[in-house]
Length: 248
Image (cartoon, rainbow, N blue to C red; front, top):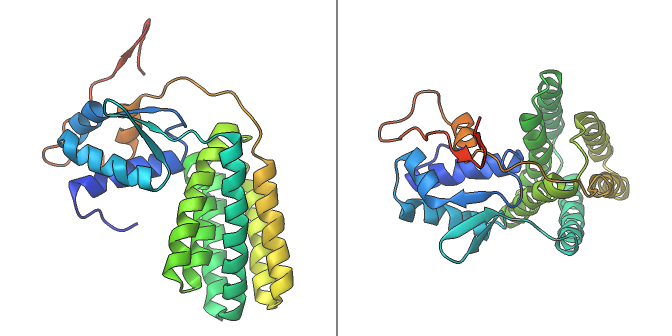
C-alpha cells in the first residue's frame, strides 16, 4: 500500500481499509469530531477524506455533517454484481491475450498469502486479500481505467457481503482463485471467462441476508490500523460510552 502523502490521505486510507475488511459495518456512523480528535486533524480534513470515500461508493454523506458507511439495498447489490461480472469478464479476456509467465507466479504468491492469513485465522486480512486478488488481475491487464473500476466495484462488493453475506469462507475463495489461475494459464479465453463467471456467481450466492451486530467502537477500530505509537499531533481517542455500558 502506498504511503499516504497528506493527513487527509491517511484518514482516507485507514477508513477505507477498515470498511473493506468489514471492521466498520454498513450503516456505521463516521463522526467527524471523533475521527478528527483521533487523528489530530480538523473536521475539514476529515470531511475531505469522507467525501473521497463517498466518491468510491463506500460512504454516504448526509445532512448536518453526518456520514455513515454505505448500506446498499438488495437492488443496488444486484446491480453492482451485474457490473462486476462485465468488468471481470473483460479483465480476464485482456489478461489471457497479454499473459506473461511471471503473472502466474505472482498470483500463486498471492494465494499463498491468503493461505497464511487463513492459517492465522486473520479474518480481516483474508477478506482484504480475497478482493485484492481481483484487483491484481485487473492491474495485470495494463489498463488503468479498468483497474480503477474493478477496484471500486470489488470494494463495494465487500460492503454487500458484510451486510447480506454468510461468514467469510477463505477456503472457498482460495480454491476458486486457483481455478482462475489454471484457466488463465491454459490460454483458452472461453474457459477462463467461464471459470471467472462461475467464481463471481458463487461470491454472489454467498450474499444472503444476515442480521447486523452492535454499533462498532470507531476509536478502537481506527486504532487497529495505526502504529502503536501515535504520530506527532495525533490524539488518542478516549473510549466512547454507550447507553447502559462502557465501550470495550
